[in-house]
Amino acid sequence: MSSSSEPASVPGGVGRTALGVAVVRAQESAREDRLFDDPYAQAFVAAADRPPASPDPGSGAPRPPEDREARAAMARHIVLRTRFFDDYLLRAAADGIRQTVLLAAGLDTRAFRLDWPAGQQVFELDLPESIAFKERVLADLPDARPTARRAVVPADLNDDWTTPLTGAGFDPDRPTAWLIEGLLIYLGPERSAALLNTVGRLSAPGSRLALVRGGMRKTLAANRGADARAGRGASSLWRGGLGTDAADWLENRGWAVRRFDRPELEVAYAAARPEIASAGTTFLIAERAPRTAAAPARR
Image (tube, rainbow, N blue to C red; front, side, top):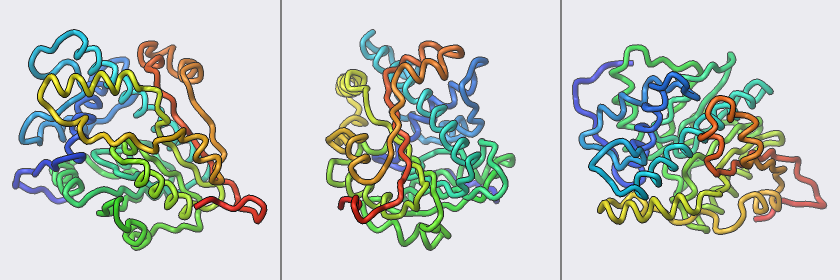
């Protein structure tokens, strides 16, 4: 990567919320008992021209106890989902899925920090301004080298994003591991459904999809209140997502869905970090079954 002395411009709106996630990932990476290591997260935070609206409870001015707990709960959620989705993607790759798509990738660095098998292709889709900031920061890190074949795809998920994705080499006839991490809450029901329907159309049999189902209503409500008291607007961008149970929605459209609730998460992660495993989140991993004449995919 080539280095640049020009300052990186931080994206606004939803793109800026990725900096808050980077704060949490950087702090988790500094822990001795960390659940993952993101050696690039701190570089994004350092490159920001002003402090991000972070879910981290340890930054910024003193906050009321209820606000600090809300931020801490959100930080635990981000740590857990990062590790859970790391494991999901590596399992899919180990099972032979060589095509990975990260929708609204933000400041995700999995293409650099995960131990991918040979031949793995990772596509990162996001808005051009978000990609520009990310690439500028990574260009100044001499050790930032992808461990997979990486394709960066500038695209607006509210518009036609399939054309730039296929233009970058995506093959809809091959099984794909899709990741939708922390995105749907910023979309309303109609746009969430449109996005998931497009994913379904692009998913060959055997494809997989991972996303957050929900289960954090109290935490989300508390963070909305904390944002209001602090005069910040991150939660004002929330649109509620699909508006119905995502598992049922996917199952009605040709996906076989497995739910990962607190009991499964505690089995997987409680030995390392009990407070993380009980974060109250539910994740979904769905697998695309072959379409049949008797059970066509719903539009």
